[in-house]
Image (cartoon, rainbow, N blue to C red; front, side, top):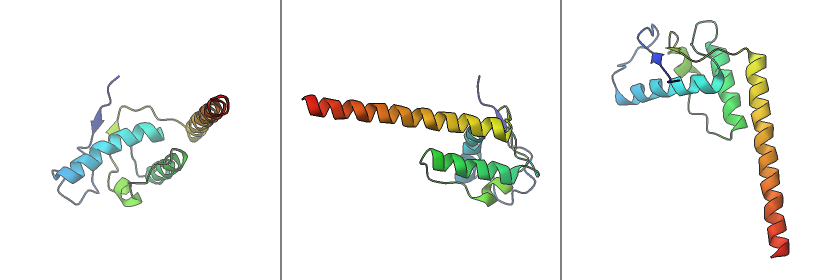
Length: 118
């Protein structure tokens, strides 16, 4: 399924949305929606959107590149991403983190054994 998004109704956006920097930032917001499990940014969920994003960055050792005001100014942004409850989203994130760490541990053990027997 393709990722579709609509930024035509952003009432808080005070800048020229045609600038390349803002177009890129807005396009990246669509991908962020997938990471945070929220398909739209609304007046009632923009803080949750940012909090999930910040947690996602910590879990994936990524730099936080979006500020809370960037999310607030994009209230009205919509995508075709399915919205997940916090409990479903956080379980998915924790499961993925644990899977990644088990894989890392396994690979580290393999490297250890390769070094010992070589």
